[in-house]
Image (cartoon, rainbow, N blue to C red; front, side, top):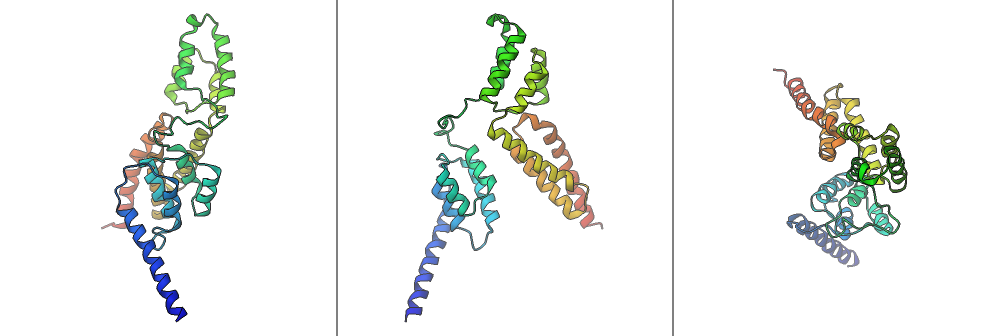
Length: 251
């Protein structure tokens, strides 16, 4: 009798989980994602048919599209990681706040200096009534204190040079990126290296290279500093795909 009751209870619980999963998948989302959505999907939905890695990937795509309607606290991060969330999911949450939170700055967070601000100060030396050397020195000190929220492209280097920026100034910019930009640089190197390590290999290796290349384009296509790599990958990937088709179907 007890076993029969237990079975009925387990079936009931499983049905609730399944119905919840179906409702979430069927729902057309128009609002930003809340933290409970993330934890619920990691803990319950699609667990039967999808791996934790796949659930993370789906959540990352959804967050990039719809943004998140919360600020990630330490407690939230612990809960998400315990539920199976990976590093890329955590970073994606941090990078994709809704409009409600996009200007939010935690206590003590630096007000990052922008490229426009640097260029403006260099371009308006005469108005500031200061020498180029003094402006350069002040900017370097300000960059050390505030950090920067961008990556220099080749065009940026050229423009700064025309405005009189010294090598010390551009080096200060490269050495003082925000945590978000530092993460982007680290992630971009890892993904691009995966492409480089595999694009000359066998069929399976070249498939890995194609996936890495497409991921690089998806993640960094709006970062001006990565334009040369993006342009190269957009030309190289179709050639790799053609090579694989010919190798798999030689006749």
